[in-house]
Image (cartoon, rainbow, N blue to C red; front, top):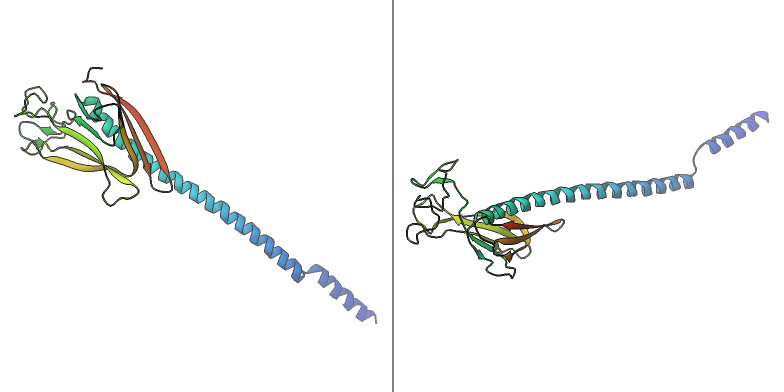
Length: 216
């Protein structure tokens, strides 16, 4: 009799020490909720980090493009587009900034030859003769070919490596352009606005540039 009593007490103690099926189910549900919450937090953190990196890449592209256009505007002696105060989707200025070729030989020279490439006859004056030294244009525009949402900003500048005055070099400054506008605020002052977007991130840049060769 005493032996049966001791066995019953041991079984009761074992039952109290273990987990019931209901307790296990509750524990699994709680763990599932915690795991789902943690997964959402991790996913949000990774998404945020990815968006930040994408935005930084877009910002770097936009800054390079803006600096390139600002450089040409600062050195130009005439702005042809925009011609008035209305905003336009494009920029065209007389090119007098590049010095990447030796004017006499038209051979590439890393340090240039000390004269603007637009001084094609190397007489010290830029665009002074319609025959031997005609006006050269630096043009910036959007390439919308097969690009329904975001476009490419294109630069077109003269190719001074050839003898032909009409030759030019064309390259893309940046991709994913959502908007590009230039506005003339004064005779020698331009405002350039550029927006880039790839769907998940967007950046907008705006700058004002003064030409040192144009009288205000």
